Image 1 (cartoon, rainbow over the protein chains, first blue to last red):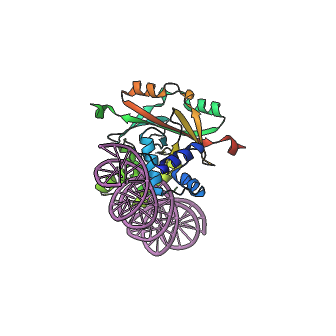
Image 2 (tube, rainbow over the protein chains, first blue to last red):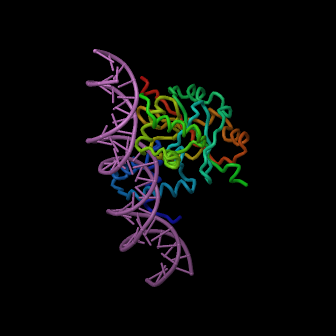
Image 3 (cartoon, rainbow over the protein chains, first blue to last red):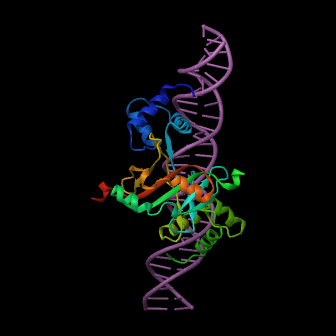
Length: 124
Length: 124
DNA sequence: GATAAAATGAGAATTGTTATCATATTTAGG
DNA sequence: CCTAAATATGATAACAATTCTCATTTTATC
């Protein structure tokens, strides 16, 4: 990765905005501060920074939603290779929602817990 | 909700496809089985079924990705009202990733854990 | 300072999803 | 069982988020 002024600006702006902004939000902030950076450049750099572990991109599954016939509480694992989605029993973290609720004082209505990695089949 | 043949077909197809399919995947299956249902109808029904708790729609955050300058392990809470994203300490579920890994035998590289609900401010 | 590699900007293209609207189906009451 | 109101459908346009393309500019290297 070569140095670039735009990337530096983007990273600094992200550091100052602790609210986990979206790309669009960042784009607006940057424009307001007259460091107008092309939307393509912004997305490119966010992806690069995330790939290099400098920032974290937060999104559950890929682009698209998945639908699950099982409505009982359970979590999901998505294989980064074959893209299959597996169920993970909620037992791995008993009372997770309750604990989070106690700690934050927020009203928690649900959770989407998605683990990423490589499944058994693809690991062979 | 009125009865509809299409909705019944969609629900049955979803039940038979335990892999948490995307809408696109379902659309292809339906087409292959000659029960061709309009894409609009499919999306409409999936949303309706999810709203009525009959199926579950799995997706982390809203439509768009959020970016986080903090790369240490921690979870997120998104307020369904004001859409703000809050951090939740990873302490609520110690060794969550390790436990999930032990249980499944998968290689887990990361997790996106997103709680949904109403934050303190909006609860007032 | 010349050159190759990497980054940029602008806008077109793509993808997943929702909205529109005219037509068809379902449900309940007379 | 007929009819009116509510609801659902299909086709396609619209939309929003993101990625791609490509000609130009910037960065690192020798």
